[in-house]
Image 1 (cartoon, each protein chain N blue to C red):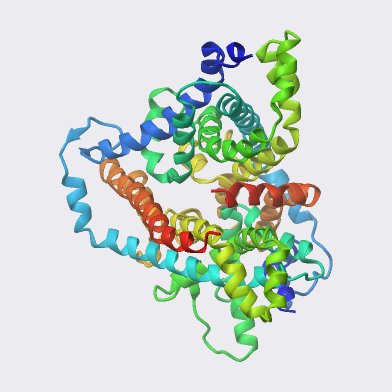
Image 2 (spheres, rainbow over the protein chains, first blue to last red):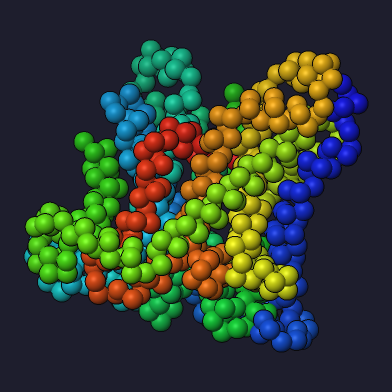
Amino acid sequence: MDRVMSDKKVIALYVLPAFLLLLILVYVPIVLTGYYGLMNWDGIGEMEFIGLSNYIALLSDSMFWRSAYHSLLLAVFSVLSLGAYLLVSVILAGNIKGANLFRKIYLIPMLLSSVAIAQLWMRIYHPSSGVMNRFLTAIGIENPPLWLADSSIVLFAIIIPIIWQYAGFYILIYYAALKNIPNELVEAARIDGANPWQIAYKIKLPLISGVIKVTIVLAVVGSLKYFDLIYVMTEGGPNGASEVMASYMYKQAFSTNDFGYGSAIGFFLLVICLVVTWLIRKVTASKEDEVQY
Amino acid sequence: MFLLIVAVVQILPLIWLLFFSLKNNQEVFNLPPLALPTEPKWENYVKVWTEGNIGQYFFNSVFVTGSAVILTVLLASFVTFAITRMKWRFNKLVLGLFMVGLMIPVHSTLIPLFNFFLNVNLMDHPLSIILTYTAFNLPITIMILLGFYYTLPREVEEAAIMDGCSIHRMFFQIILPMTAPVLATTAIINMIYNWNEFVFVNTFISSDKYKTLTVGIQNFIGQYSTDWGAIGATLMISIIPILIVFFILSNRIVEGITSGSVKG
């Protein structure tokens, strides 16, 4: 038995194909991204080693910091919206009739491609014939905003469909976690005289803190690397008002043909994502330890 | 009541999309947004299906999605089997490397991948996206499979080996069928991801012959920038397959999404 189950040839045969794919298409590229960042390179011609110039230029590139700020803003709003999702889940998990149907309906936007969602919301925001402004005009608001063409609100106009898109995903995760809480704990609290809000706040929330932590990581990292919707809806415009780190990287590499600089941004993005994940886990770790039982 | 409002908000934009996909421009601009079209304009659908390359994009999406799903689920099953059931020294390390893959942003790999596919002559070739999808979906697929594999009873394997069954036969004829329910879950999760993927296709594929629906409709809509009915019909065509799959298999999808993220 042991001999068969530790046959080196079989193990290699089973693990290597997937492992090589992972290595060649995920791990080697992230190392190369850091390396290309050291180059002056247009993507076609010869690479020229220029040391840390790209990385240093990045530090004083105001457009990059602006895009990083937009990504951060997106992350903040995504985390804030988690609170709303949690509220919906708590209500949904409270023995509501049709809860199953509701959570499926909520999930539908999440299944659609970002391109379709972006195209749909571009019509919703259409200045004259979009539903948004037709509704605003109908309730008596004159000169409704231009949404995607107004640099002061474009970022918020993009955050709304993002929140819409992912609502069902997070509600589903919270719902599943809440349903996993043993009924005895809730019953015991109820017998001790706790009201529904106390039960939700003092018992249920601490019990799902592990899941909340995971969703915070997902929301923050997801926001930092967000791209599709923004690229299709505004291409980062107008005047960079909705540019985020990933869209800036994409432009530098594939529109400006500055692959070296694009790589430096890509590497920065990777480092930020890994550091932020590590930080969130570290900061929230102690909190979780307290409620361990 | 509150839940109902949320449900309406989630679904309303799509109902509006369905309505304007069946209207002509005059109706879109003059009728109230949620009014039914005076007479459904099914010709919008016929037009976009026959005039453009939608059929080709559609086929490409099915082909690329299907190939990548099969490859991912099979490779991930091999790895998960070797990691959870077989005895070797570096299994935890290899598992760790797959799991770290979950946190890597695809954009950080885009430029080197572009260069790599250019050098191995896979640029503008479906294989470039099939392999990329597989590599990037392996971590989440393995993560979902892991939990299931840990619960499989060891007695089955012991009995099979006692009977002189080879390890490959055991894997294909006993283990793989036993994991069928979780394989279905992972396949659906993979399917949704691949069907909707945008940035890799947009970067690696340039000819219409190989474009998938997400990138195809993006270009296609450009030609019809003022014909709302045609745009609506195009968008509906791209989302209907995923909605049908969802209505048939919604329980599995819900289960897959929860098992794929809660453990993370």
